[in-house]
Amino acid sequence: MSHPFDDAVRLAWQGGHAFAGHTHPAWANMVGPYGGITAAVAVQALMQHPECLGEPLALTINYPVALSTGPFELRAVPVRTNRSTQHWTLELLQQSQGQAQVMMTATAVTALRRDTWRANDLPMPAVQPPEEAAPIVLFDTVEWVRRYDMRLVQGAIPEVLDDRGEDSLTQLWLRDQPARPLDLPALAAMADAFYPRVWLRRARLVPAGTVSLTIYFHAGSQELAEQGSQYLLGQARAQDFRHGFFDQTAQLWSRSGLLLATAHQIVYYKE
Amino acid sequence: MSHPFDDAVRLAWQGGHAFAGHTHPAWANMVGPYGGITAAVAVQALMQHPECLGEPLALTINYPVALSTGPFELRAVPVRTNRSTQHWTLELLQQSQGQAQVMMTATAVTALRRDTWRANDLPMPAVQPPEEAAPIVLFDTVEWVRRYDMRLVQGAIPEVLDDRGEDSLTQLWLRDQPARPLDLPALAAMADAFYPRVWLRRARLVPAGTVSLTIYFHAGSQELAEQGSQYLLGQARAQDFRHGFFDQTAQLWSRSGLLLATAHQIVYYKE
Image (tube, rainbow over all chains, first blue to last red; front, side, top):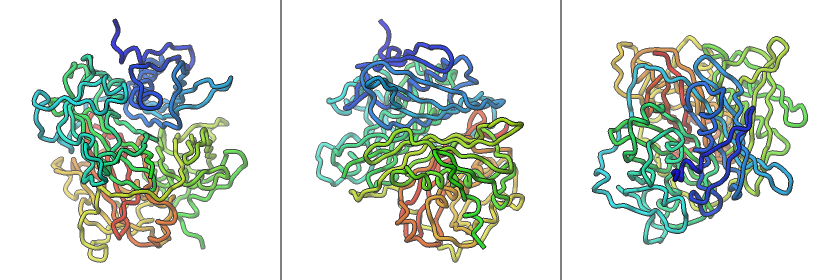
């Protein structure tokens, strides 16, 4: 039996720049699929494209509308190839009433990673190990949260919804459930695994949805393979809530403290 | 005489989704124009497009190659329009040997801003006022830095280049020079006004260039107009340097402490 993550990101190359895929019920969100799995599908397409130079370095994915359940076509076009970087545009199309509708747009950069001087300016916070953190199910109304084994450090969805939240920081350990060796598509999916910060900061469950998500991959496939299926530490916090939109930044560290990915997203919220 | 910023972002709508523009020598960087002015041009195109819904909310701009000095065509296509958000793809083309070359790709979201619940989770740092901060010219080898009146709080380019930098934080006050009322294109340009963090963190001026830049606009035109031409406080710091790329996050606050924009970029560096 294959892993539900591999089932969800499976793409059939159609020749040229086109890939065929299908939404997967194991990754359903409130409306349409979890945004993180769509980001993973985009990364998968890049890595599977026969012309891909290097590996994903940066991805910005925009969500104009929730995907419909069913098949989709993903187009990933290398628009400019340099010596060590390659620039891509992507779009995801679904048929509706005989017309192809754009359901997602994205740009990406793939790159050859080289050995260079290195430094980290955002050390992993000192928190309790995953074995001592409480297992949580973020909320029980959606399917995708069951695809992760999450251990909460701080910042659960508030139990008392009284408009009196005080901060927007969540820290949690997470890994695929069932366990699966880490790779770039899985890391992309995990970069979106934080519920909308407005629920925490405000202590009120208002409708909210990601509009645009940017992920930078600081690690390549080899470094990720070395993580195996260990827990990652994820952290997310908001910067500003105003005019119906807020942004949240996120980081994912390996258990040994290596910063694997950083992300930034802007999210719609109501009222 | 018109302002050099207005000269640089001037676009002639060609009908459909096409705009004609021209690089401007006042905004030259080491090779090609300053990345921030290209981001400003993209914002200008969105705002000038007759089909634009609302105002820019999010912009991701990718820089595959330095622009050539001369004319360019900018294409800004609204690919999906919702009730309160609109999703765009953009590209900048220049002619070379009779062929149109893609010199920039971008995606953007424009949106109607509404009055909602609001909160800030990233207060402006307490720093000395601009009148007490030292005027600086970041470096004297490029033209664009002269387009800003900058007052340094901390984090100048190190004078001693000994590979012994310790942190990556720069804070500075900035405004257009000569003064100009703040608007969304100008705010986009300022979001890139921080020199590469690797120079500071490493204390070594290695070759570096932005690969991809994402800006979220937390304020609309009206809030920006209320700022007039006052100084903004800008802050940038890196998160991780590895494999020839690092990311830097940035924030811009109004003098009164309103978070106007947040940004995130990934930057190539050598060695």
